[in-house]
Length: 353
View 1 (tube, one colour):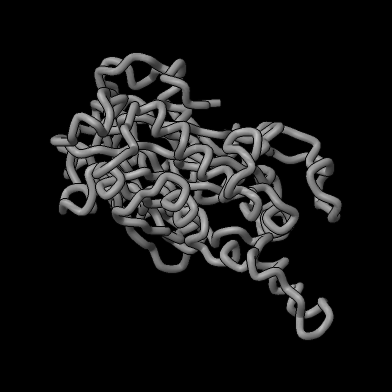
View 2: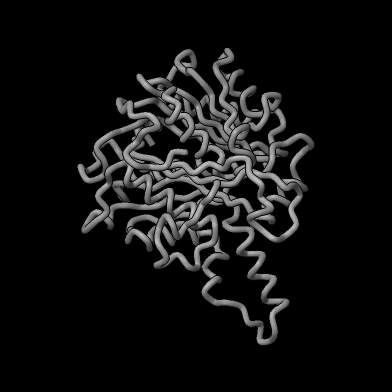
């Protein structure tokens, strides 16, 4: 992929909150990072939203706001040229678990609600986006944990370059639920950041996008490289290799990189920053997205990119690296360069906060 533009975007980021007010089930901590006051019916209306789980609601609202921010005309023939690529860890852990539990505890013949079954599959959110806006081009869900968003960007760029779509709604979403909170609590190392939630969606277009796709380019994604290191890639070689390949494909010199946006959650965590700094031969500014967003799984990199666009750091054509690394050894790096649009966080109606 080369020169994929970001025509519009929207991010919903969790903030420190008393999460015991969201759920009756026990939680490992009374606090977490949730999108404050999120009400999908208030944002989208009652029609068609009754069966949405939380992650689907976050994704659909973000897509709506990103399309509005880009000024994309979603009508007529345009609907056949707009696709969706969303990253996830495993869809809605809560929906899957609750539905499975109902098949065991409800009275025979297992009176589960069939309307809730679609929420148990990973592509529910992407499918509901297409249904909501009548989109008929490529529709894909990429499961990849922390690297899922970069894989979704790579997928979307390939779809645009090969002519399968003119516009790709590309992002990732994760919900805060007791299931994710406990999973994060039981598997994360001591001192790790708390579970969070959020969604980020970007309207991606090619260099020859039609006029209805959107009139501006807030930034360009010049290249994406992904890889895998066996044994969890403890020395970060896979991530370093991704950085080298992405810079080479983008034809960007290491000296031109102004900052590195990582998924790290603490200042002492250098698992992503250190390998990339070694490739660059210096220590540019570091922006640990997880520090503010919490453990948002697949959405962390998307939230980091949204925060980067809102900060104005890309104004004037600045270049940054967006990194992601999974515990299984998966790794990815994207090269992002600022575009001529200087609207910053004001946008055109999207909720960037």
